[in-house]
Length: 98
Image (cartoon, rainbow, N blue to C red; front, side):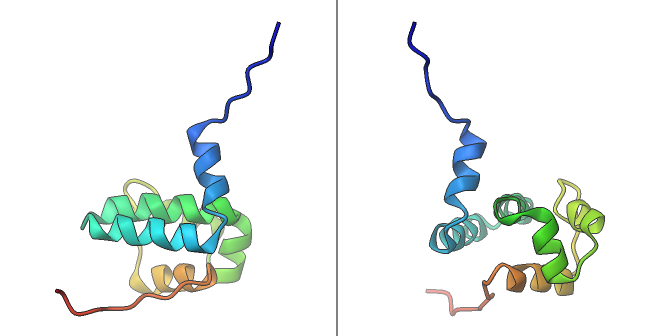
């Protein structure tokens, strides 16, 4: 009997998001949807791909608070979001609308 090899979608996504270019494109696409909750889910996936505990420490955020702020009901302060994005090696910018 042949063993079928499959990968869970979330596992595949987290593996892909370890690549900074993929993660940046993923976060940018989520912002284009103009849905704050979707962006938080995307950010949570990127943070999970890079290791929640490691990123929390690097961002100087309490791990439990970081989990809470990235949850469905999360409402992060801008400074926390800024710190988290920066700790992932990204930056936020504003561009003129076309």
